[in-house]
Every structure is written in C-alpha cells, then in structure tokens.
Image (tube, rainbow, N blue to C red; front, top):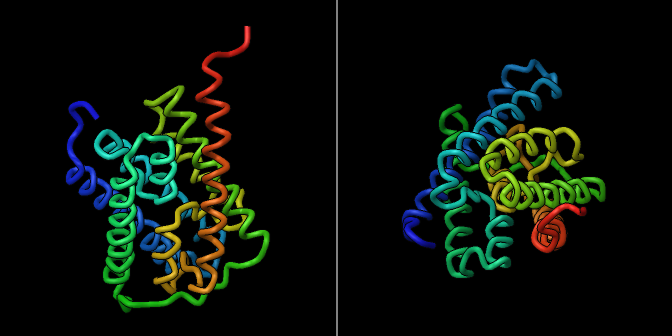
Length: 227
C-alpha cells in the first residue's frame, strides 16, 4: 500500500462516503416525490441527477484514500483481484452497511419522517433481476476499465454510468447490496420491499462476478490494441 493511510482511515473514508451516498439516494427521492406532483419521470430524473452528482464528489474526494467503494460488490471484486485483503474487505462491507443505513435514517429525520420504516414497494420479477445483474456488471467493468486506462476519469465515469443506468435498466440500477438493504428500510420513493432484497442481491453478485471475469480478459490480459 506504500504511503497510503492505514485501515482505520480507509474505514472512516468508507463510512463518510456510504453515509452521504445513501442519504442522497433516499433524501433526493423524498424531495423529488414531494415536489414532482405525482410525475414519476420527473421524480426519477431528480433522484438520478442528485445521485450522479454525489457520486462524482465522493469518488473524487475519497477515492485517493479508500478507493471510495461504498458498495460491497466493489469491495468483493477488489478482494478477489488481490487489490484489497479479504479481512479489510469484510471491514469495508461492515462499515458500508452500518453507515449507509445511518445515512438513510438521517434522510428520514431531515424530512420529518419516522426513522424506522420498512418499505412495501414491490420490485420483483425476472426483468428486475436481469436489470440488476446488468447494472452491476456494467458498474464493475466501468470501474475496472477506467482504472486501467483513464484513472483520472473514474469519478466522472462511475457517476455518468449510474446516471445512465437509472434509466436504461428496469430496476433503476441499485447495483449495490448495501444500498439495497438500506432502501428496504425506507418506505419512500427509493424503497424496495424487504422480501425482494435477497433476489436483488443475488442478481447483483452474479453481475459483479461476471463483470470481474470479463474485465480480467478485456483490461488485464489484453494490455495493448492489436497492430
């Protein structure tokens, strides 16, 4: 790791990033629904813009410290690629869940909603699961490909990918097991019924695994363009 900061600082970075990312996803969804007058397209657009914007900020700010994963799927892929120790990945994932959920609860507090909630918004079916698998697959290859070829563009690439994936996937691209759990604890615009969470997470992990395998072929084994 060279002169990078130690695990405690990495975890603090992941905690801050997860808190603000999850608070933004939930909070902007609440604000959007309040102001959109029942127009779901406008509400989704507002939610999308806020999420893409905060991703750019957080990855730019925290990427040099912890990698700004804020996502268990990303941390698991990093560990599988030996870029992060498995023990450190477990610590990352614990922090992502805990502080992400705190971010969701903070959003509830800010909008004078009950802190403890369970979503009843159904998000199920083959189309939704395929959407999540594709969303997570695309996120992983976006991260790994941009790190390999244009590392300075990682914040913009991830933010723009998620902005697009909110609209081209049927699931609106959760692409993150921790935020899926947090969203099940929020009966708001961004929510997901708790009963639908396991299938979403399974699809996300399958998509992440496929993304890591394809990235290994595209970006690690193929180091140069053909002559």
